[in-house]
Image (cartoon, rainbow, N blue to C red; front, top):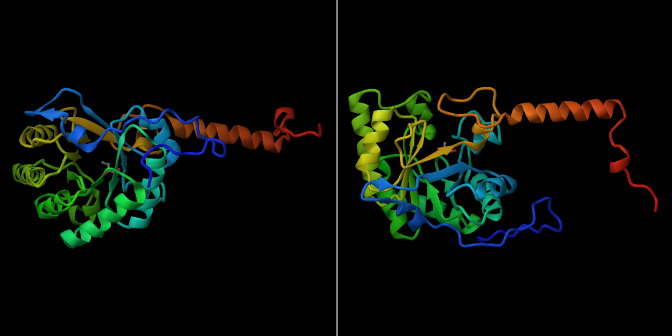
Length: 289
Ligand code: KIV
C-alpha cells in the first residue's frame, strides 16, 4: 500500500498531483510537546474521502478518519454501528488523497475492547489496508494495557478521553464531562494511564475548561481538544461541522463556511435550468466537427 499521493489525474477530477514530499510522522507529532510546552499547536481535521483529504492536507498536521463517518457519511444514529470495513475503505481513500499530513484511523466500537490481541488483529488490518500512520481508540485506564500492547508491536496509538461517543449507551448522552470533582479526577487518571502506556497524543472531547487544563498539564504527550477549550496542545473538529453542513451543530463548533446553503442554492439553480431547458447550454453540448 503506497503512502504517497497516487491519484491518476488523467482519469480523475483531482487537481494535478503536487510533488510528493515527506509526510509528517508520529514521532514528530509527539515531539511537538517538550517538557509540557507545545510551541506549534497540532492541527487536526476529520477526512473521509480522497477529495476531502486533498483539500485539507496542506493545512493540517493530522487527518483523522473518524468513526464520526457513521453519522456524517452514512446517516447512522451514532458511531456504534460503524464497521472495520467502513474504516478501512475510507482510511485508504484519505491516504490516497494526502501526502503531507499523517493519517490516523479510528478503531470502531467492538473491534478492540475485547483484548489486546483482538485490538492488534484489528489495528494491524487497518494499517495494512489503508497505509495510515496510527490508530485512535477510545477509553482510559481500562485500555492502557491495550495501548501498551499495540505500541510495543509497532502500532502508534492516539487516545481519546472525556466524552467518548462510542460509550454513549453508558454515558446516556453527549453532555460535557468533568463537572463534578470525582468525574474530573477519574478523567485525569484515564488520560495519565494511556499516556503512560505510550499514547503519542490524546483527544480530549467535551470537557469543561479546568479539566482540559488539568489533563494537558498531567500528560507528557500533546492533547488535542474538541469542545475542550483553547488550553489543549492542539484542536480537532469534524470538518463537515465547521463547513456548516448540518442544521444542528454542537456549541463548541465554529462554522467557518456555510456549505449547506451553497449546495442547496446550486442544486436549486440546476433544477430550475433543467426544467426551463436552458441546461445544458451551447458550451456543454457536443456538435459534429
Ligand atoms: O470520530 C471522530 O470524528 C472523532 C473526533 C470527534 C475526535 O473521534
